[in-house]
Every structure is written in C-alpha cells, then in structure tokens.
Length: 299
Image 1 (cartoon, rainbow, N blue to C red):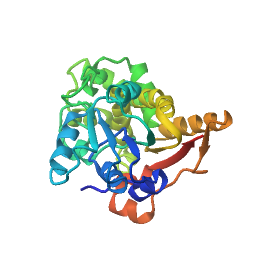
Image 2: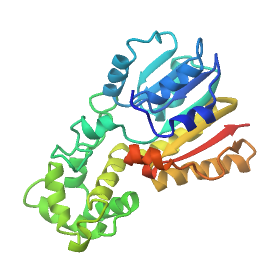
Image 3: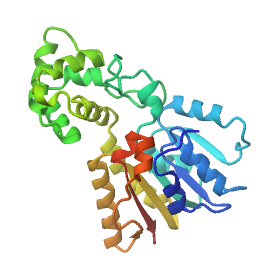
C-alpha cells in the first residue's frame, strides 16, 4: 500500500480510538483510510469519498484480503456534497475528518488523462474520470475556448506563472491554425513564450501551467471553500479536522477558515504553524515537498 504524505502525523492528530467514526474526504490510494481503520478497530468505521470511481475500484482490490466490509463505506461522489452524503448513509458521531488535497500517483503515472507533461497524452486533467459528475470542461476545452485574458488570469492566480500573459497569447495564436489537443502540443506552444534561460530550470517551465489547468478543471479552490463549513457542521464536539494542502491558495483558505472559527470560539487550532514534511519524506516522495498540514478541533 502506498504510504501517503503525513501518514504518521495524520494518525497522531486525528488520534483514532476504538469505536470512533471518521471521514476521509479524499480516499485516493487508501493509505490514510486503512491507517485509521487499523486504529479504530474492532468496530469503528470510516466513510471514504472519492470523485474518481477508478480509485474506489483500486482500493476495493487492495483491501480484498481484509475483512472491512462492515467498517468501510466507499462513496463515489464529490466531497462538496459532504452533508448530503453523511445524511444518505446515516453516518453519525464523527470524531474526525481528513482532507488530503494532493494528487494520487495513479493520476500522474497511469490514468492517461494528461496530468503530466512528461508523457504525450490527451489534455484531460479531470479527476472524475468516467465516474460521478463528469460534466466539467476538460483542459483541452479550456485551452481552446477560454479567452486570452481568462487563460492568463488562471495561469497567474493558480500557477504563479511569470510568463502567464505571453503564454496565453501564444496559445490563442496557435489555436487559430490548429486546436491544441495533447500535452506535447501544449508544451510546444508555451515553450516559445519562455525565455531560453528559464527553459532548463530545476522546475520544468510547464509545471505551473499544468497545475493551474488542473485546479481550474476540477474547481479545486471552490470545492475546498464549500466543504470546510460542511466538515465543521458534521463533526462532533471535540472532533478534529486535518487538511493537507499542496498549494498556497489552498493553505490560505484553510488558515483563514481556522482563524475565523477560532475567533468565534468554535475551534481550537492544534498546529500554530503548518506542518511541513521531513527531509526523508521528501527524499522518498519528491511530490511531498510543497505539502502543508493544518489541524483544528471543534469546541
């Protein structure tokens, strides 16, 4: 089983005990969920949500040797529907909720949906795959239909891209001749907007653009804003919320939400500063380098 980012820290701060119920809003490869189930045995439960049915299928195969049928509830849905899901499954007495906002290795390495610029794949970048609610515009539609101004805004806000306006201009110019349909084609277009001295930096020049497109395709910031107050509402008094973010905008949303709740006397913040991964974790998993974790408890 893939060991996720902040695995030990998640178990430490959520502190699962026998008989307690938890929600993993972002099942992914199931590492955090199985860790919690190991701690809240023999009768504690986990309701685990994932937008991508493919992830749920993969976890079902991985847990086939474990007798977890009575304790693990797998739901193919978007966590923005958290309160509705909790109601539908009559899942009560919730002691903790986890939001791990990172991408799974599957999406990058195996999905074939265009999340990585290291392979030539169709421009998709949609987490939902063929599962629930696959009605969002994909990256190809965004690249070929958004105005230059809107593309530049996305690249700047979600990617922090210094050449955002120039890259957007190159895209608009190129798509007049031929639609941009693959990751390779997109890289070829935006490369011409990057000064030569910046083309061979440690961080690939396409990294921020791919990040920005993924966030826009999946409405990641909007979804986070929507789910945080829902988590607060479903938590028991004394229940804990742990959020693992990988982008400064995500971290800011979590920080502001926690501070607002603390000011109102509704939550205590358990992490005065966000936790950062240790050197060894980043060495073993370079994608963890930007991870931050914040935890708060409902009063």
